[in-house]
Structure formats: structure tokens, C-alpha cells
Image (cartoon, rainbow, N blue to C red; front, side, top):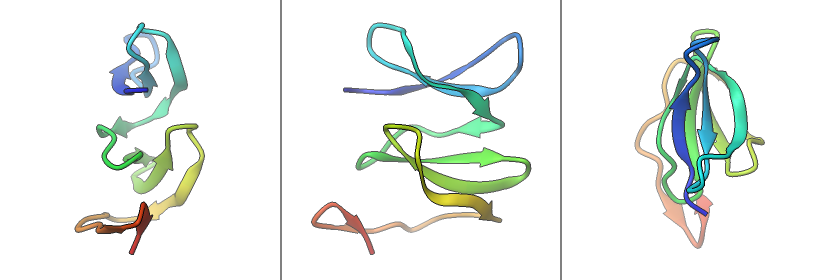
Length: 77
């Protein structure tokens, strides 16, 4: 399933929609980046974190930035 970041024009928050346009991850982020290797960088309250395609945090939004992620056998290393 491909998920795409989408902005709510009502709340100005970001969430994710599937290929059918159904909202899969609710509008709750200040910024949302595209998924790569089944994870996406999101921003909330000025901090960034990492979510999976279920919207669960892999890394909570408590970092100033996230970059240079590498994957080995589907695991961030």
C-alpha cells in the first residue's frame, strides 16, 4: 500500500492517504514527508520523529533533525 502525505485545509495539519484517497493516518503532524522503506519522517511541535505505515512512532518526535538513515534487512541501523 502506497501512502501519500496530504494537508488538511481545515486544520493545516498533515496526515497520510492511501491510493484510493482514504485517510489512513489522521491529520496530526505539522509536516509529513513521503515514506521510504516503510517509514516516514514527521514533525510535531517543532521536533521530528519517525513513523511506520500504521502511524505508530518508530522514533518519537523529540529530535531536532533526522538524516542519513540506513537500512539493513528492513531495520534502521
